Image (cartoon, rainbow, N blue to C red; front, side, top):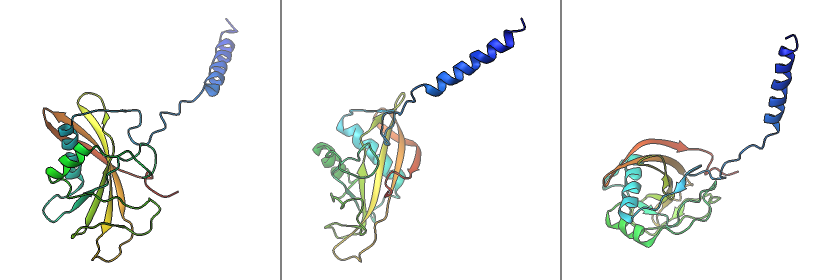
Amino acid sequence: MSNFPAWWAGLAALLVAIAGCAEKKTGDGFVRGTGLRVTELPVPARVAIYDAAVKSAFDVGPGLTLLLDPRLLPRTKGLGPGTPVPKGVVEALRERGIVQGTCQPPGELAKEAARCDVANPGYIVRFSDIFGMAGDSVQVHVAVERYNTSTSANAEVMRFEKAFQVVGSGGNWRVVRQGRVTALTERE
């Protein structure tokens, strides 16, 4: 019985050593949709999710001009190249009045805001894929960037990104949680 505490101490030390040497899981390497899979949805559902996110991010009205970046956000850090937004999604976003056109901003290291060929100033929105969560919830990221017009003053780059948890019921989608994403679009 006198060796009992020493035996436990030795076992505890061995377990701590094994845990310290165990391979650490690094995750999936993604910063958008970490641990989640891309969810393929029909165009109307996808557009409704993007619409819910936009309405949560902006005070939407006739004075707001939004243009679509025709590329999806990459899953990795930054605003690098992305796959094209499917044509049917682009058309549906325009038909529903969520965006008024498209404009692709220059690279993320640009010091001046994008120049878009439209009459009114506003913002470029860039969506991520839609990531499936538990139950009827999905996650989507939206990066927003101010643009210049041919008649506006040259403004510096102003951008932000938000992540949204959106819940669907029937054909209706609503944002239930959102948060500003930091360090994902900042320069290193």
